[in-house]
Image (cartoon, rainbow, N blue to C red; front, side, top):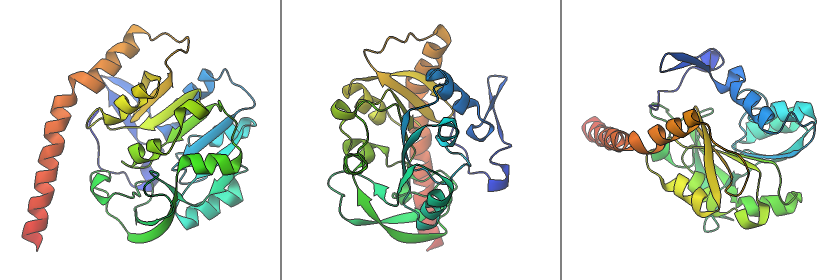
Length: 261
């Protein structure tokens, strides 16, 4: 699926994605959330970690689980949104950005653009324009989990940090924590994130919207033929086209910047 220009916030919950003639609702309409609940058998308790939590309910990967009785951790670097999370959610909130061990302890620039805010300006969603730039504290995910006393083998990890996923993953000890399900945003401009998860002992079992679903490689879940095809198409067959498209975008961006000056 091609990356798209960002939608106005008022349309986030209404937008539909059409995939080969079928209509698939966005996260705001709850389909992916329903699949997550089904994965855990509708469990009324569990532990989640959401990195890049953003708003308390809108586009949240964990609000629906919290309503069932789950507990967990929310990581959100934007101070205003972190405050909203503290007021509206029962999960423990960390008002920091997650990154690599090399960046931990520093303050980094966050390019604020609503749900498309990013630490890396050049990795932002195409069309996203920063409203402002702020400095935020940085920690590794391991450090946060240790402080929060997260349980080893916790249930659900969601990472959506607008292109900074590899840095977050590099500060997370998979061998120690071993989450049952990992949702990772990945536009699949290359296979670096996918290969990282495979090297960490995880396998891809589903592709929904822009998220890859990963589980431990030894988990007893079989892929349907349809899921195998969707994964092969997204991660391998269409990859050369996306590489060429992204290179073209970068070139056009550099040319625009040169002529604007």
